[in-house]
Image 1 (cartoon, rainbow, N blue to C red):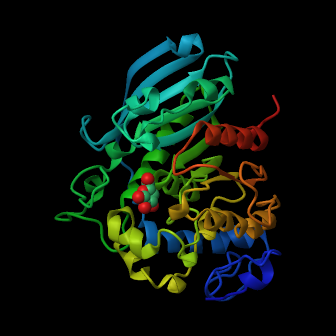
Image 2 (image 1 turned 90 degrees about the horizontal axis):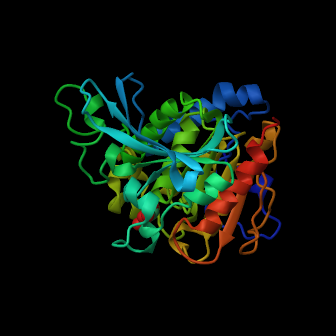
Amino acid sequence: MVDTTIGRLALPDGRLSVPGGLPDPLVCADGSVVTSAEEWYARRRPELLELFASQMFGRTPDTAIAVHREVLSEEPAALDGRATRVEVRLSFGPASDGPGMTLLIHLPNEPAGDRAPTFLGLNFRGNQAAEFGDPTEPDVLRQRWPLERMIERGYAVATAWYEDLDPDVDDFSNGVHPLFYTDGQTRPGPDEWGAIGAWAWGLSRALDHLQEDSRVDPERVIAVGHSRLGKTAMWAAAQDERFAMAVSNNSGCGGVALSRRRHGETVDAITRRFPHWFCPNFSAYADREETLAFDQHQLVALIAPRPFYIASAQDDDWADPYGEFLGGRYASPVYELLGVEGLAATELPPVSEPVLSRIGYHIRPGGHAMTAYDWERFADAADRHLRRSR
Ligand code: GTR
């Protein structure tokens, strides 16, 4: 591994604490330095994608699969007439009642005829909870999504329940994985996709659908997610360049936080508690983060040059807010190579002072959650970076 990053990128405040340094996003495995956008796309980007696929999230199958689509309902005057509410069932595989996902989509009714930029994200407790809240669950999960506000700000919002795609237990007999098994296979092999891979795949299938809906702007779909679903949004956008932007809300370890910092949740902790999120190969790096050929700033680099927004929370030490900031900061050289600005702050911004550069960042008071404040900042970042002239 080539360790040139610290010399080139050390923060002026000297707060950098990444034992052993970081692998440089612009240095290839053979030591050659990437100096042009062409080299980035032809060599280094594929190399990094391959590393994240084979060593962390597992490879996403590229087998084409039948998708059965059924519009379950359409309500043109939802949210006091301001939105059109649509439910669409996507079922995968040969059987029309196969595993799938139910997309709940709210589209702004004004301005009529416009194609709306769209936030697309998976939810934790079902579409009903995202829409109405879930009083039986603790705060983070009870939080309903601020649909009225996003509609008011001109965004469509599409969501689906993550457990529809994979039920989030260390059991691969259910969800979408079995659709891709070879004869006799019962779980993914060492470098095959885990749960995050399946959830990310689901986001891409949802995007396939949204791109065909004439009320959605196909070039302005934003992958968004909280926590494990923030890791998912990042992996989806890294692989699928049709996502115009991505948002990580408190994604922490395995998301935007640098693994080498070993602050809060570590590779050891996450692979013990949630081995099924990743491919089996990833657990080999528990307590050996320095042997990873990559770190999470390079997952951000795979999203470059598209806008990427990072939201941290002050009391969410488990997700390592400073490590999340550095994950964005150290992706900046790739953004700059591709001709755009990276993360414009060289030190952690003060609480509640968002930085809205192309890699954006904020840290707000409070704990692990995706709050109304966070959503407003996602829309601010999208307003700034995805606005198009009419
Ligand atoms: C935590 C886990 C984190 C994060 C979170 C969540 O328990 O340690 O990696 O993903 O769950 O998804 O809510």
